[in-house]
Amino acid sequence: FGAGISAASSMVWSPDGKYILIVSTNYRRILRFDPTAPFASRLTQVFDLMTGNPAIIPCRWSPNGSYFAVAIGASVQVY
Image 1 (cartoon, rainbow, N blue to C red):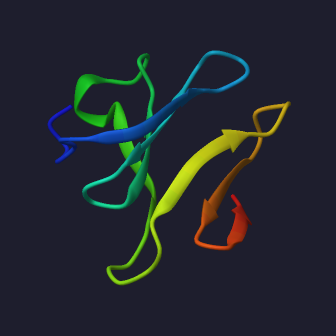
Image 2 (spheres, helix red, strand yellow):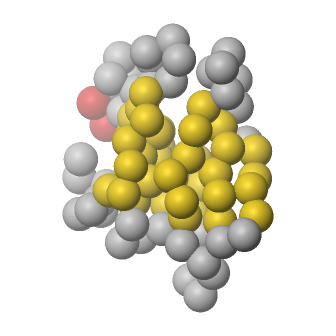
């Protein structure tokens, strides 16, 4: 991808099939891949977990694709 991803713990398609959320294990980030965007902006960071926090657990989209949930340690956050 060219954005510093060398390992991904999960990749999840949005319900409408337009995007993929990627959880990067090595940099502890969540990125959104948009295959229809211009090449330089296909991959955007949507969440960055600070060093020292628990690892990100694979995320899930809401059924309508408006939100996604991510488990971080013992908590769940919705974006």
